[in-house]
Image 1 (cartoon, rainbow, N blue to C red):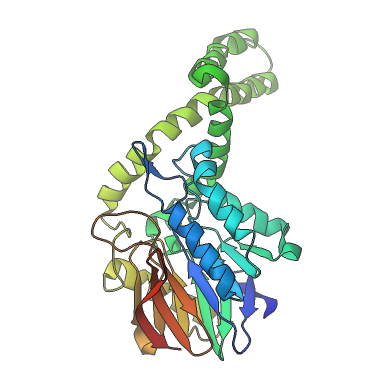
Image 2: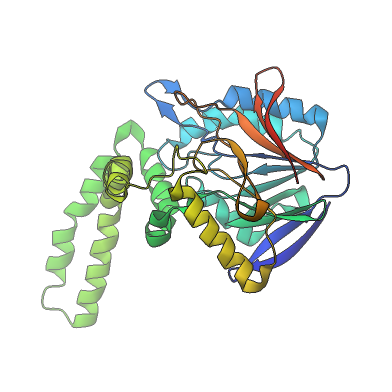
Length: 337
């Protein structure tokens, strides 16, 4: 296996080339820490067993294609509780691991810019990665890039990691006192403004900046409390184009995917022979325009009427969409590269 670098959309992306006989396994949307009431929806125990199975099979590459950790709405303690066993199993894998950040684990993207763990066989890609196999070139990305709301509101969801970190710091205060502390900071605002009343403009400007900083904890806690209702209850219904649960046959998925690939190929990147993404939680393997192979990894989240614990396996001449049954692999679909 070889690792190189290329430029895509003005950004450096990793290019991994598999040798003959090597294979890659791609999983996405584990959402470790996701709960409903008192029950974890993420299949973290099943994923732990799957990783133990992979340790015996020894793939050359494991790709974690985004939203592995629920660093959007789950408490950090819940994420750690669900992730402990899988991470322990992951540490025992003798292969390179590629982590492509998603929209729910955007925090991980910052690790890619520093290249902290490349010597330890962990490679982090903030947006895209390229996989070359059997003379074919594939594009790997999480899939939120197909959702115009994430493109148009890029500034908003890129703030999410900072909102998450600050809110988790406040949640760590004893006796559930985060709201008391946040309100206490806001109570200082009249004192700050009164102290600078009639002061020179530079000092008034500094006071206004201080007021914004003092308000930040309350704003962050309020946003963390309403973000799911705002995003999924207001923005998504108004947009009427939520990608979750939509298949490749839906124009909401196929059109932005076609536009993205056309843009990439038109910028001198070369042909994209196959695509692997997630985000929609719908496992699929199909032929697209011009015979291009398109695979969706599905998810490891319990959802009514939808298969879970699915993954994609890529080798020099074949792509498989499979499901982990708890005791072995069940191939759902297969195509030649």
